Image 1 (cartoon, rainbow over the protein chains, first blue to last red):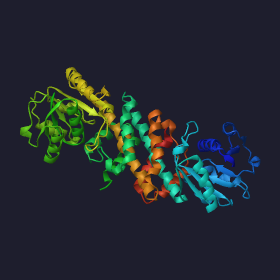
Image 2: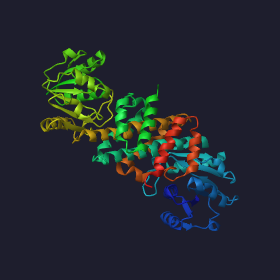
Image 3: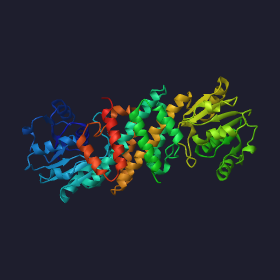
Image 4: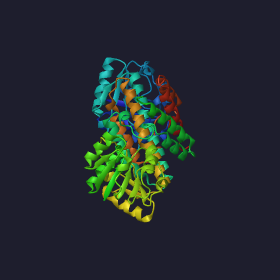
Length: 254
Length: 254
């Protein structure tokens, strides 16, 4: 199949490379950034353009992988009579933004993707939604060429997956950053936390996290919590995070 | 060496078993709970008691592993002229609570310990502090029989480790619980998050989490954040967590 990739960021790069590796042809990369579109185009042996008028009209698929804010702009510049199937890759965006196109759908990867990092697509869950049953089947088949973890979900479920991923990745990642910063501020190597982090995530993959919770909030140990809040007195934002999450933990299951 | 374990919970159980496996003798388990002290005593082939007057006075070490709130009670009931070394295992408690005892120190495990789960002590970081250099050396040597990860830290550093562990374990664990709950509320199997969770903590062990952050908060994508907050409108506590952590992520490094 012949593809045009619209975008040149993290998702565009990883999907462009995965599609190319699976035998698809990337005809063209369109992006407002000349440098980025040229970089990705080179990696997937495509031509690149920054000009709307030069977007190739002959592709089988148009893969939109721009930031959520820019999806509507890309939808606007694409010809509504285009023959190919228009696909976006956003967790938080309904399929309905693509309704002006006869054939359209969504391929959403539930993973944190960065263009600099190699991604093992075989374990990458891809969530599919099609504007009609035929398109849905075609997109399912393509996704199955890329990964073993393909599912059909509607736009509301995809939004749920996206919110869930914010909690499971972005927020936990930030808390690990704070944990390291606390150690380093007290001359303790951050590697000291390694066994605890491994245990935390391994246990959370095997159990209900609420049921295996430990620590002062779970024990309703206000005295220890006060010591911790006092320790954090130079960091009011961290105190706020500490308070709200401790409160949530202590009321969980009660 | 001969030990009395004071406490019968998660830390008492795991240390009692590890000391016993390393060739130490557990003379006695003292706990206010008859059932729990009998259970642990059986596991480590010790006698058990719930009576302060019957605490064995002949041990080399008294290992206090009770909840932080109860440490002072245990210190009070122990004879200040006791010959053995009195050790507590609390992250958030200064060594100074033990100063009435001639020989005293701290052995703090940086790990989430539950009595039901088998723990690999060889990767368990133990932080040591001694009331005097000789006691410190003795405790270091004992800890090195249990694990390869022994360090010397003072009470302030130990408090920092404990706070850091709350962020890295208790709080991330709770966020993973929320992430699962969101999926299950939308008929998506929680296993769908598995590859993302694996990627999250593997990357956080290799990089500075702040530098590899992705997602709408990092991109300052207010539109997506609004969709997420609207999705969470039935859960005001989750909205609060979402807002404060997104705010923190978006200001990180700016």
